Length: 281
Image (cartoon, rainbow, N blue to C red; front, side):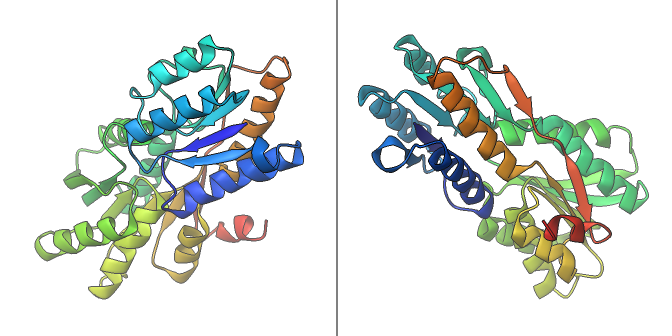
C-alpha cells in the first residue's frame, strides 16, 4: 500500500497522512509494505511517484491529489494493471477513474463557513478571502460554497481574494498588504494554516478586536487560536477519520471486498462557544 500526499507543509496534511499510516500499520502494512510520497505541490512529481509505485508492484494506492485534472491519466493507468485506487480529501475531475473517494464535500464546507461569517457580521461589511492553490478541488469547491452564500448578502463586499497556497507565511504577507489599504471586517481563509497567518498579521497591526478570522480543518493551531482569541471560527472535516477510513477501504479493495463509491465527512463549525468539545477528544 502507498500513500501519495499533495504536500507535507502544514498541520492538516501531516495529521491526515499520520492517520492513514497509523491505520495501515494496524492492518499489517508495515515496513516496506507501506510508503508515503510527498508530491511537493507539483503535478509532475506526483504523477511520477504514482508511476514508480505501480512499476514496483504496489497493490493499492491512496492519493491526496495535487490537481483535479493532472493525475487522472496516472489513476487510469494504475487501474488498468489492477492497482486499487482511493482518492482522499480532494476529488479528481474524473472520479469514476478511481475505485472510491473519501473526503469532504468542499462546496458544502465553504458554504457552512461563509454562513457563519455572515451570521457574525450581521450580513454587512467588507471581507477578504485567502484561497488554496488555484484549481485544486479544495479551492474550487470552497470558493463555490463561499459564492453561493455571498449571493444572498448584497451588503457584503469581497474587496480582495487571492491564493496563499495553504501556506501560513504567504497568508501573513497577503494580509499585511491588505491591512495597509483596506477597511476589513473579516478574513475568510480556506484552511486554518492561512487563517493563523492572517491572525498573526492582524495581531501585529493591533486589530485583533476589530477583524474576525475564519479557517477550515479544525487543526490544533486553529483551535488554539480560537481559544486565544486570534481566530473566530473553523470548520472540521473529520481529518483523522478521513485518513483511517481511506486505509480501511484501500485494504478492503486489495483483498477483493466491495466498498462504497464515496464516503463523505461531516462538517462541524467550531467557535469559542463549542471549541472545548473537540479539544477534549
